[in-house]
Image (cartoon, rainbow, N blue to C red; front, top):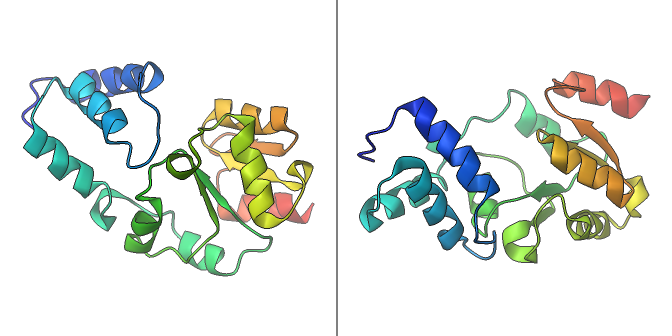
Length: 172
């Protein structure tokens, strides 16, 4: 993108811009993402931003966990994808080859994890009470939000690291 910052500088600035973003993840969330890109890279260029924005809707931008597509095609329990993402989520999931799933997307719901409302919405998609949910997330704050909402929570990468490990927990 023409940034003159190192990858480490961009990563630090991205994390700070994400945490302090004045824009909400609502609709297509372009103001949210533009803030992140400008703050992280220092580059203010609409054409480059639009290209980057389009890239993150494509399969090229993402790596799907080995076995995830087949696991999600026939999960051992009902699954709803609960994501802090914008309205491109379903198109992005299609692009990476994941099966159609019920989704709860902050861009569509107007609320982000770890807000209790998003977990209530996920429970409603599955026609379950919130205490019937197991929320698995790579962000400890989102796991805590689920627990505070009344669900069980697991921290991916800490408490569970593989789909086999998750299945073992589900069977227990």
